[in-house]
Each structure stands twice: as structure tokens, then as C-alpha cells.
Length: 405
Ligand SMILES: Cc1ncc(COP(=O)(O)O)c(C=O)c1O
Image 1 (cartoon, protein in one colour):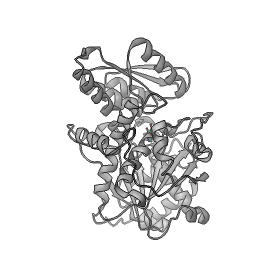
Image 2: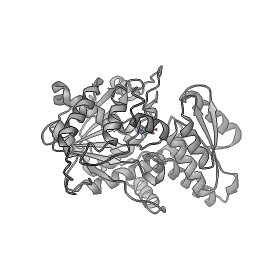
Image 3: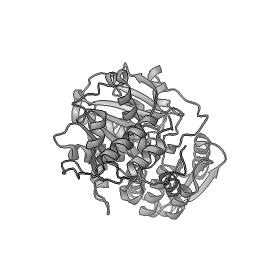
Image 4: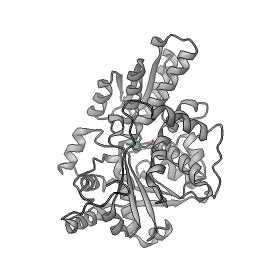
């Protein structure tokens, strides 16, 4: 149900309540870190970061692409009732440009800009090759962006990336190379190859000296928040639970909300896997801190050991709390969302899409955490369904209940 629409009255309200309670029992916050650096500040509008101008440029460009449509914002009254809050809103990115995740907004936008710069500089357009390392979703966006503008894409994946995700990038015309190692290993090879071959890196994460392209990627993500601001209308968000990998998506959303809300910026809560809590660690240390990933989370897009420099600059002064969650609730929550548990809605929610919901349900069970996060009767909670069935085989097997990890 979209915001403002009437609720479809489910005949199985009782069953839904039981399902929500059962899935909630699996949700677990492993650690909560409060950010003592947060201050009520006006949006800084810095030239070196996301600002009114680059977010507007992204909006103008992306909203003009064929097939563009704002993704839905669903209201979940049963979940709100269960959690004792005023409203829960779910921004559903499953159908974004037919690519299955919000990532479609970022990489493809950066590739489009690269092509424009090449054209303006009078360079040979057929010589442009873009490259990236990826867990799947960002690479798909870069491959799609390259296909849109007609340049080559070389994508590096690591050994844990699924076959379906690899195939999705090949289907968009990209060359895909699998590296025997983790994400960091694939990024290292990608950086070396980009330098030796003269390819353009289109990374979704930034580091000292590499900011221009990831800034455009994040500006692309801010389009999601601009839609959101229009969709919520007079139901102002009080709490945003944002899934975080390198922090690019959260940075893009927070910049747009901060521009809108200024000093009254709502509670911003990062949600990470306890197998890759690099933001939590960094916020606790007040400095970007690397986390060595030992085991991969099922939420593949959140498996990141290092924060993005640009995202850090936006999130360090704005995050209220950093939560890390276990993998336990991923499969039950995917089923909960997929099986019409909320007002008759069947939501195709991939692994990462469960992160915010798991954090909310776990916080709700714990009175101390509820108080710590200032969750109450008047709260309006935003969740982001960051992906749909981006790995269709895994998604199907989980929905059938075969995979309960
Ligand atoms: C589906 C999904 N959700 C969330 C994230 C996290 O985004 P970020 O790395 O920008 O924090 C990713 C990243 O790849 C993703 O693919």
C-alpha cells in the first residue's frame, strides 16, 4: 500500500501477527554504538561533497532517462502496530530500472557523466572502457550504464559472488573476471588493471585522492531520497534505519534529508552485518577504521570492511546510532515480506532489504534499546528495501524455505 492509500484489510490479520512475532523472535541486534559526534547542524552544502547543485544535476539527468519512475513507498500498518509506532514506511527498490536494486541510480549515472566528459574533451568515444570491483549490484549498474552509452565494461568479482549475479552482468554485455579472494582482492586487481590498461574506474567507494566518480555515484542515490521527500508529504520521518556497506547509499539519502530538514534532521541509524561492521567500529573510534572480514554475511551487499571517505564525512556528524545485526533473521524476514504479511502486499525483498526491518524488530523487543533509539508512539520509521531478487536462485530457495541460514 502506498502512503496515503487506504489499507487493504487482510482476512488473515491474526496469522500475520503470528508471522511477524515469529520472525521478530529471530531478529537480533549484536551491538549498538551511540554516536557522540552527532550535533544539530545546518546542511553544510560543501563544494567538495554532496550539495544542492550536484544532487539537482543527478535528479535532472536520471529522471529524464527512459523507463524512469519513482519506486513505491509502502505503508505497513500491521508492522507499526506490532512495534507500537505511528507508521512504518518501506521504500521498495526491487524494480528500479529493471535492475533490481537502488544501485541502478549510482554507477550508471557516473558512467553517463564520464561519457559526456569524454565527448566534451573531443576524445575517441570507442576507446572508453569502464571498470569496477563489485559484489554484484554495483557492477550491474556500471554494466548497464556502459550498455546505455555504448562503451566497454570490465567487471571484477570475487570468489563469493554468485553465478546468477555474474550472469546478470554478462547479459548486459560486460566482461566479467572472477578473482580468487575476497572483495578487497578483486578491488586491488581492478585498480592495477585500470592503471595499466588506461580504463576508467567507476567505484562506489571513495578513498583519499579518488572522489569525483564516487561522489557522482552517491548523487545518483540521492534521487531515491528526493522521491521519498515528495512521497512522505505531511508524515515526517522521525527514524531512518539505513543498511550500510561502504555507506554510499546512506550518505546519499542523509545528504538529501539533511538539506530538507536542517538542524531537525531525524534519527539516522546505520544497520550493518556483525560480520562487517566497519561504520560501527569507525564511529566508536571517531576515525575510519578497517574491519577484517572473516566470514561472509548472507547480505552480500553489506559485506564491506572499509568505509567510503565521502560517506564518512556525511555520516560522522549525522548518525545517531550504529547497529550491527546477525544473519539469523534474513531468511525468515525475506519470507515474511514475500508472503503477503503486510496488508496483502507481496514484497520481493532480497537479502539486504531485511536489514532495517531486522534492526527495528530487534530494537522493539528490547525496552532499553527502544529508549536509547527514542522509538515511541509518535515515531515514523523509514526502512529501505534496497534490493529485490538480485540473485533469483537464492531468492527462490529461501522463499521455499530450503535455505534457512
Ligand atoms: C542491495 C544493497 N543494499 C545495500 C548496500 C549497501 O550500500 P553501500 O555500500 O553504499 O553502503 C548494497 C551495496 O552494494 C547493496 O547492494
